[in-house]
Image (cartoon, rainbow, N blue to C red; front, side, top):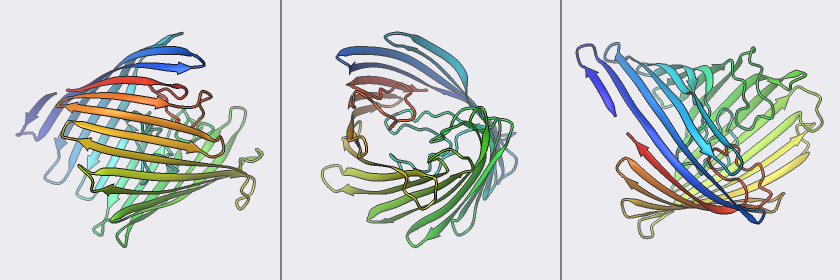
Length: 355
């Protein structure tokens, strides 16, 4: 990391980056497939203190990678984040190519509207969105979010169709402290682009989280598409979750989530339904090592997805060894494949170096 600091002008220029490499062996349809990759994400940040309370900063990140598979090679260098941010005592305004996410769920996220973070990914990579986001924190710990997005051509999160690039989309979120936790209401509207036609899509969500020894949360989404596509007009998502750390050894952390989804022509009709359950457990082995597992079960497909991870951290270096076993037919459980397999069984080694 390179950092230049000027106390006189209260400004700071910082350069850092992340280099990662991976190799994966996957057994699929009675044969082994191998792939390797290398990724570098440099980050340049600049901060300027306007006064004691107000800060202006900018950051640019570039995602460059090379991947080699059994049948093809791919490489790219593209803008990953480009953000201009103003931060005041209680407010924040952020413009540019950024990451926007919210909600308490971790594995089965009904509120995955603008990102596609894979819970298996140690890098937590996801495409950003172009937009303007405003955030205000009240004295009572309530939080107001407002945003507007424009010029995004790719699908985001669970979207079946991308947005119209030439039509802005808007939304907001209010988060309130309730008892020993918080409850939030979120809305968003956009114009979906189905190629030969476009239509208005409105989303409404309610979520909450409470901690009282055992953590519990929920995410619920109702999506209305103003289009005459069979079984597509209404989509309902509900995630229920909980977590607890058992006082055994260094502490075994357990998390469970269950998601119900339905798509129908009428809001109260179940239509096409699906259910998925997920389990995550982690255990720290000393200071350097961590063991983790993730398991997913799809009730409609009757398929089990298993992912096991051993991770060691040495200062700036992370060594991540993963074993996985998925159905050969794969599925749409994981939206963001990145460097991760979605079908078959095998092993992956990933090295991550931060500077």
